[in-house]
Image 1 (tube, rainbow, N blue to C red):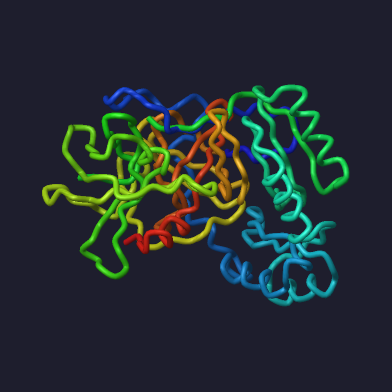
Image 2: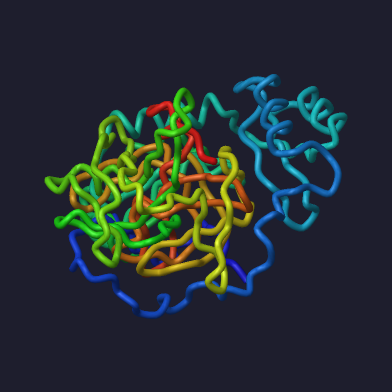
Length: 370
C-alpha cells in the first residue's frame, strides 16, 4: 500500500515548507490525489514478533559502537529489527540478542562524517541529504530548481567517497508548508495559517499547558493565535528556527477552551497521545493537518538535512511518505499513542513529508506530552 523510498531517479519529489502565508479561512478541500486511504492497518505495527524492541535494538547498536554498526530499521515482513553491522563479532552479538544482523560496508562514523562535510560545505536550495540506513549510503537528492552547475558541484564533491555516497536528480520543488483543540486543527495568527501539533505541559508545573507547532509558524509578527471559529487559544512564547530546528511554542491561555492531549485520527475519531519517543525506520506513522487531514505512511529516512527553496535549512528531519500540503505545518506525526514529530515541510508532488523530531522540542522547553 505504501511507497518505499527508492534510490532511483524515477521518483519525482516536490519538497515544500508548509508554512507559507494562507487565507485565514480553513481549506475544506479533499485530501490530495495519491494520499493513503484512511482504512490503513493499525499504526501499532512497530511491535515486533520476537527479538528486541526498537529501543532495545538501538541500545544494543549504541553499545556495539559507531565503528561496528550503521543504524537500525524495521523489517516489516519479519516484524523484527535489523541492526546493520560491519564485522562478524558485532553480527554474532546482534544474532544472540534476537535481532537480525546485516553486514554492510560503511559504519556510522564514516557515513556521518560525509554528511557533516556536506552540512558545512553546502547549503544548495532545493536539496536534501543524509544517511539512508537501509541503503548504507549518504544520499543527496536535488530537485528541479537545482541548476546543472550546482548539481555537478555536488557530484564532484561526493566522487572521492565512492559507493558510500551518491547524488540523485529528482523532480519538483522543495518548499515549506504553513498555511475543543486537537492536534492537526487549524490555527491562525493573522499572518500565517498552520496546524496544531501537540498539547504539552511543563514537567515542573502540570497546570502550565502549551501548544507545540512549527517554528516557522511562530517566528512571524503575529503573536495571538485563534482556532478556526475565531476563538482565542493563546500567544507565542517561543520559536526555534536556528541551528536547523523548526519548532515553536504557544502558551495555551483561554480557560474556556479544553486543551486535550489528543490528535485527529481516522474517520473523525481522535487518538490520545500519552508519551513521546524517537521514530523507527520503516515503521507505520500517521500525521494530520488542517489542509490534508489524516493520512498514514512509512517512516523512510532519519536525520536528513533539507534546504528549502526559500533559503531556510533544517537538519535532523524525519521523512515519511505521507501526502501533506500548504497549511499542514506544525501538524503532529505519531504512531499509536506516541508523539514522534512536527510537520516542517513536504514534497507535495511525491507525498514525502519532513518532520522535526518532537523530543528535541520537548527537551528545549522542558515540556512533556500527556
